[in-house]
Structure formats: C-alpha cells, structure tokens
Amino acid sequence: MNRWLIKSEPDVFSFADLQAREKEPWNGVRNYQARNFLRQMEVGDLCLFYHSNAAPPCVVGVARVVTVSLPDDLQFDPTSSYYDPKSSPENPRWSMVEVAAVQALPRPVTLAELRDCPAWEGSPLVRKGARLSVFPVTEEEWTGLEALLGERLGE
DNA sequence: GCCAACGTTGGC
DNA sequence: GCCAACGTTGGC
Image (cartoon, rainbow, N blue to C red):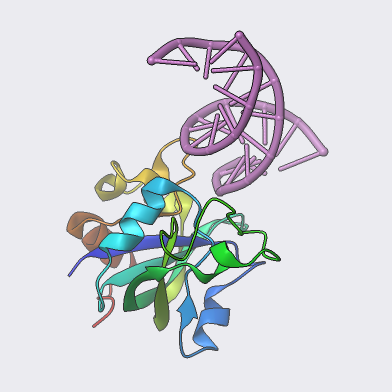
C-alpha cells in the first residue's frame, strides 16, 4: 500500500465536507506531476488530507482511495473552469481518483510542526514555495506524524 | 530550444 | 494583501 498527501483549500472543500459524503471525485488537478501521482494510486491507499490556504495550514484527516484513476470529468465540460479544450475523451489529458474519509486526526497537525519534524525534512510539503498538491508520503513521514499524535492512523 | 512574460499557488 | 516560487505559454 502506498501513502499520499492531498491538498485542499478548506474554503473550497474541507475534510468535514468529505466526511459528509460517501465519496468525492478528486478532480481539477491540472499539474502533470500531481496527475502522474494520481495515476499511481491504488484502491485502499491512504491519503493525508491537508488544508492549504488555511490559518494555520495543517493536516486534518485521513482519506482512502476508493477508485483507481479515471478521466477527470471536468476537462470535457466547457462550462467548468477546469475545462481543457486540448483534451478529448479519446485521449484524455487529466485524471482523477475518488476518495472517502477514513478519520479525522485527533487534532490538526500544522505545517509548522511538520517543518520541525526531522522525518518530514525531505517532503515536498515543507519545501519552500512548494505548490505540488498531490505527492507520496513515505513510511518514515507517516510514522513521524503518528509519533506527533501519539496514535496510529488509518487502522 | 530558449527564455521572457504571465498566471497560479499558498505561506505569511 | 504581499510576494516568492514555480509551471506554462508563446514569440523568436
């Protein structure tokens, strides 16, 4: 099983929003590196759910991948801001997965805490100017987060 | 293929 | 609201 981190602006879609639904398409990702990670996801993979553009920015929950990657529906919708006229159903450019909430963290873990956590030193999350919205989380990073919380996650 | 201009992300 | 970082676009 692989582990990931996915970012969302809570004003747009929060972890509480995810908890209120059975599952949610993770669409609208328009970055090739992030897309390639979406395509590597497998059913059952766990994702840390991160609130970006929040005060403070923090990891708030765990989600689970419930479908492998599919063509992102929004790329074909001319009314969507995620519409991509260069994409076609025959040769879709963008992908999405579907995710479901597993659990809220016992408390939010802030970006500042993860910056201070040696296990997270190499993560794209703590790189200066980081904008990548989907990326892998290593076992060491996962364990480091659990150590901060004093609790296992996603059991 | 280079690179300047521009747009977006996201922390602060 | 500011601005640094970075990805994309398009002229050449």
